[in-house]
Length: 132
Image 1 (cartoon, one colour):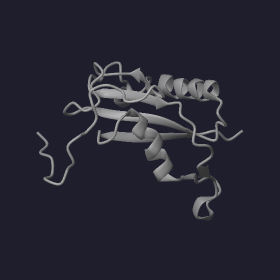
Image 2 (cartoon, one colour; image 1 turned 120 degrees about the vertical axis):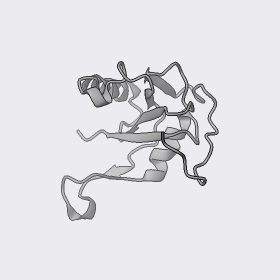
Image 3 (cartoon, helix red, strand yellow; image 1 turned 30 degrees about the vertical axis):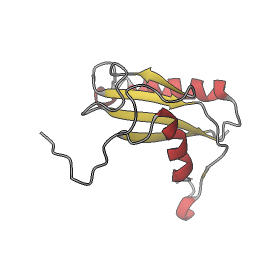
């Protein structure tokens, strides 16, 4: 059993999604803040308010994740996969650290988008950058 550090903040999210811009691709009975639940939240950069394109891309990535046992939320009860359709524009760029293929993103904007699903929850943020 894992014991949380004393400084670990207690989740403040309710067990349900906070905003209409956040939706489940898969869920563990809708509990975002239950003990042991991991939330992977997909957010978009540079989709220029094209929610349909973002949802299509997020769904493709989700479908691909399901092919790998460690990421298959269908078989993992404590894994939620969510996406946020709110748009904050283009907040990522290539050539980070002078490495042409390295993508850097403004983490505060990614976190702001992920907060649409509730704050204080255990989460990993996956930024999907639209680069034509």
